[in-house]
Image (cartoon, rainbow, N blue to C red; front, side, top):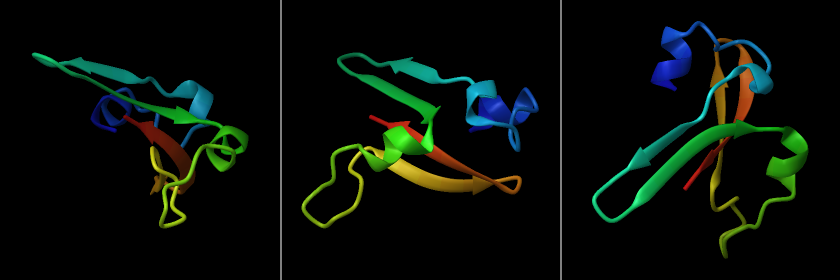
Length: 68
């Protein structure tokens, strides 16, 4: 979210945002916005929530953020 805020990308279509990859010592973490269609078809966890997709409202725009 921070990099998109600094680049003034928030409030725009998801395709205008940038994703991030964090390379740790033994792990990789990714976060990027995806279209609603992909978010709704993503796998769900046992509690019925989307396991890797978070829904956020930023600057009046709904984003589906894939985080893994």
